[in-house]
Length: 151
Ligand SMILES: [Zn+2]
Image 1 (cartoon, rainbow, N blue to C red):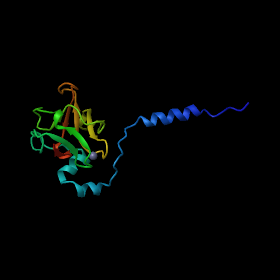
Image 2 (tube, protein in one colour; image 1 turned 120 degrees about the horizontal axis):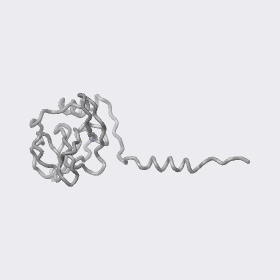
Image 3 (cartoon, helix red, strand yellow; image 1 turned 60 degrees about the horizontal axis):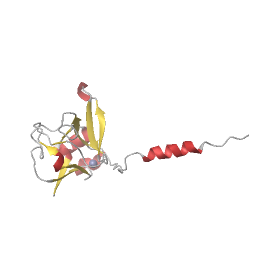
Image 4 (cartoon, rainbow, N blue to C red; image 1 turned 180 degrees about the vertical axis):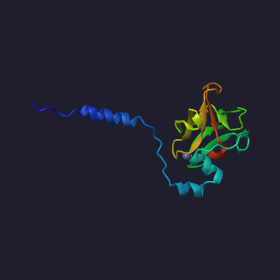
């Protein structure tokens, strides 16, 4: 007797694929970003550099609005979730929707959670677990990775 193909296995595979992020990735060449961004924005977002504390545009900003990605304009952080961290970098306790992704950064002999834009992969900063409620998280972000749209 002939055996049938296990179709249920195919359906299972398809349904697990659907569970992934619905953000369409933006894939551009290195020279596209070099041209679009300032030197500092390029170094931070594409080469994982960190701006010096208290030097960025937004660490002390209290204006109401939305912080967007310098690489692709995706909305990343709301000023409502920004808080005074005393670190010299803009700090938020959460991000907008599923627009920020996390990976592990092993550089400098430390293991830290690096965060980047879900659409263009721009490096934004790091996330630490010493933030305020309701999340207890601190997204420590480079101003150079951000643009701002006032409300
Ligand atoms: Zn982006």
